[in-house]
Amino acid sequence: MYEDTRTIDVRARPQDCFAVLTDYAHMTDWQSRVCEVRVLETDEHGRGKVVEYAIDAQLRVVRYRLRHFYDEPTSIGSEYLGGDFRHFAGDYRFAAGTGATEVTFRLAIDPGFAVPGAVARLLGRAVMGRSLQDLKHRVERVSDGAH
Image (cartoon, rainbow, N blue to C red; front, side, top):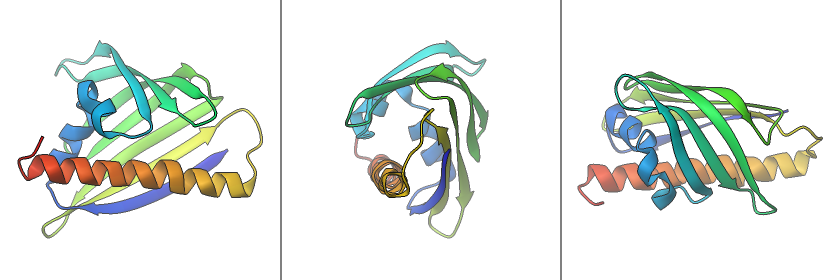
């Protein structure tokens, strides 16, 4: 099991962070590792309830489906419904601060095989760190009026 939690400050409101992460139609435009996103089911607010992702893991593309839970604008949670992992859990939390939002990303993955410590650390930097940097860049561009 690989588990990690990372935090980054984003110069925007929690609502802006929430909106970018729930705009599944445009996720492949800015999330560098995401190569496909399909909303399979929506909730009563039109947000993705069941979402299928394809992630470029460099050695191969991995696919998985999540059921998302929302507490707008403070969190996005998920339940693993199936895919290429034995287990997958992740959530985002958004805490308003002075002029910025603290975004916390928690991820727990069991790929179904042993992951050496060096590879797990590389995953943390390459996947989680890059994901948060991509989010920060996108949210700050959108909140500044760029598309």
